[in-house]
Length: 271
Length: 95
Ligand SMILES: Nc1ncnc2c1ncn2[C@@H]1O[C@H](COP(=O)(O)OP(=O)(O)O)[C@@H](O)[C@H]1O
Ligand SMILES: [Mg+2]
Image 1 (tube, chains in turn purple, orange):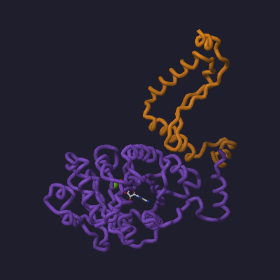
Image 2 (tube, rainbow over the protein chains, first blue to last red):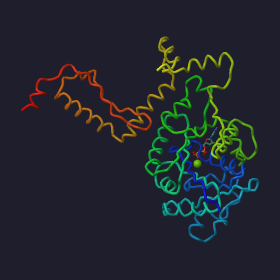
Image 3 (cartoon, rainbow over the protein chains, first blue to last red):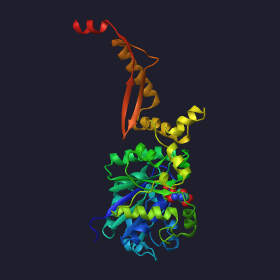
Image 4 (cartoon, each protein chain N blue to C red):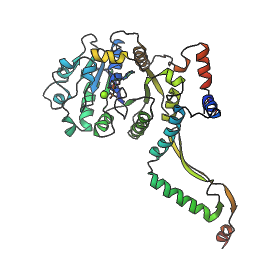
């Protein structure tokens, strides 16, 4: 029985910023590093975590049957074949949204805490009931956002709500970072976003086509030992979560040629 | 403002879009975080100016009352250049 289970909500406010992709990749990465990890799909309306993990055909029971006590937790958990330290608790029927209460989420998470070192909760977008139920069951949170105005604004709203609910710590993952666009100052920089949101940065994830390829296959990048940019970012984040001191990638420091130096000079903040 | 922004300004070009994004976000978040609607904020500004002009003559055109935000703290910042204080101010207190 794990006593110091880390229960982490992965949320964003805005949809489509990369919560589910991050949950799948961190889940696998943590499991590969030896941590017993459960990923809980709390996005009952639009569940996808099963698909990203390639487990969609192995679901028999879901969180719904566990709550109704028509099956045991271990019957509903789907163990990953290649990475047995990882298990998925699938989301039930979207109609669960009608009756699910904060206490239900708390019950499920506390059951998972008995068996796992990490419980990662893939949160639905928005700030309505689905989000509130998930928040009530968590201790800490990772905010996922993109370097875009709408995603940052929505993240800010969610951070405010997490603060009121006493969720702590709250850390930031900046996803879909494009160093070239940052260099030409046509994308908010990593510092811009951390300054504006006033959150510690857990890590950034580079924009990477391989994310789509891996989604097509149902094999998260961290599973296949890929060395693609996003894969490295995801496993670095997982290692930081485990307390390892992994330096942050600085997109503006990529490259050392004359052109890169000039671009960096142009980014110097004057006031 | 970055070196590139200054260069762009000298060359009469637009600010970089990252700069614009930063400024727009700071403004919209100051409002979001304070939870004040634009109408309420306007009303508050008007009333603040009214109260202040009871005591001092202010330069309304150059004055500004705005919300600013840093480190998740929102501040109401008033910058109201005073032309001169009004004589009625002290007499009210004395009597
Ligand atoms: N680092 C990345 N590089 C490229 N595409 C990404 C990256 N992260 C996420 N995506 C894509 O963005 C889309 C939304 O991701 P998803 O994880 O489903 O977001 P959410 O769960 O927040 O709605 C997906 O199509 C995914 O493949
Ligand atoms: Mg999702």
